[in-house]
Image (cartoon, helix red, strand yellow):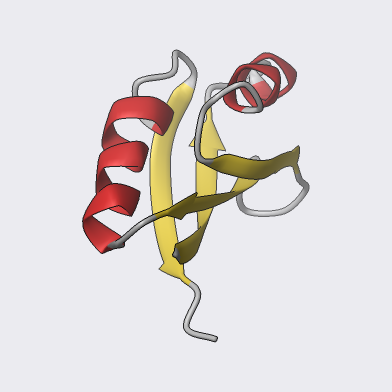
Amino acid sequence: MVRAYILMTLEPGKAIDVVSRLRQEKGVSQVDAITGEFDAIAQVEAADVKGIGTLIVDQLQGVSGVVRTITCLAVE
């Protein structure tokens, strides 16, 4: 199992709606609205790195209100 953390920039005023929507997505272990440079962070899991990429493109970036994502793969 591969785990990654996804930092997200969201449209202004959409953080709560986007976080609620992402919590329903398969493969998303946890997601929180945060303060600082990014608006939300999600922890995701998939069988392999390709699965992480598919999850991000198909499930996270496709959600209305998500502007940009940065993926950080967990190494340990």
